[in-house]
Image (cartoon, rainbow, N blue to C red):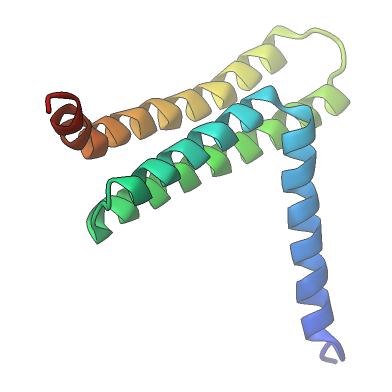
Length: 126
């Protein structure tokens, strides 16, 4: 039998997702840092009138960092419930998950430098 209210179910899933974002921003300092960096980069993109391709790369890198931060946060929370005691295996897994966020953040910085480097140098050298 099909769900009589599929739209309501979809809207509820969005509510859960937004609650997850809110929780991540409330509890994770790195998520707040990512927020500031994202806002700064988006403002710079508008101010420097970057092209569509540059917007594509910025959007993808911002989404990658945010997505990996969310997965890392969820993974760490789950690890803390499953193994609240200090265990080297859990610490190793948490470190590797955090490394994924770091790798994406480094890539995002490189993308930002490639996109904004020349325009900023041109503005500074005037």
